[in-house]
Image: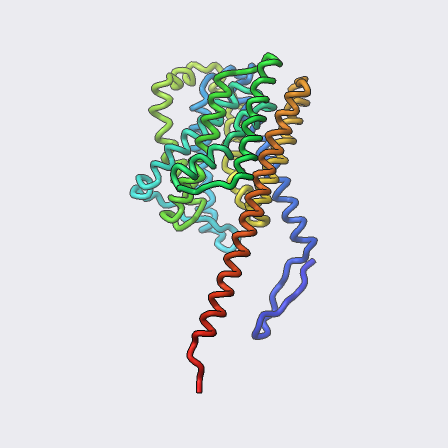
Length: 355
């Protein structure tokens, strides 16, 4: 149900009701959870399924990038056909922008490659803890690259996350499912995610602050960058000799993973737009918790109490860090508002009085 409001001048506009807005937010959050969790399980199947036995993680990641580029082209074309219903940037490839976004694309390739390599070697249940150091690396790189300092409270939360990470690694070893390679790729993935977020902010102005354009150029560059990597690692031979290369089920799962990879970018943007970056972080943390429980149930894994404690510690540290940053942003906003108010009062007092 929609109510009506009036702008100055008497123009009547439709205002979205609270129930309608709440339903929209709930739908987007549910879509984010469903797509994100489903994507992890589908990728796990493609990367390390005993049914497929395909040892080509870079090929899987490359294909997902190609699907994203194709979907960008389709949506751009659809936007031209239905301009009032579909809004998407024009599908234009500018070679200068390809070169300008190349440094970010290199980090992007590292990020998605390490994410999938981590998932290949570790279970879905440990996947969140294995990549939990993103916040810590974000603090480190913000200081090294941007010279931004972090408060003591936020650093304490980072310390809690680090403790939870090492406790989780120890408990994976105790349960007999520790993969050193998986942990290594998880740490590298965390570092790459942190670097990616920093470089995205630097590159965004080059593409008119349009997140879809940066998605397009990232995936175009990545589609090319992956080719020599697959050649060096011998994945071309692996794919050509893959016995199920013509199997419909295999390509169906590959296409689904590519669609999920594209869709997660859309629903993430929608979730941030309808709520806030803070709410998105909280939603992501809660989603990770649900994903861990679902993985243990789905794969029938039994974990010791300390393993669950490590997850709780990481989740608690991440939530605490988010809350600390929220309060700091709120205090900074209040200080800036107060400073503007004082400047306005000062300018009014210094203004020449009219006779």
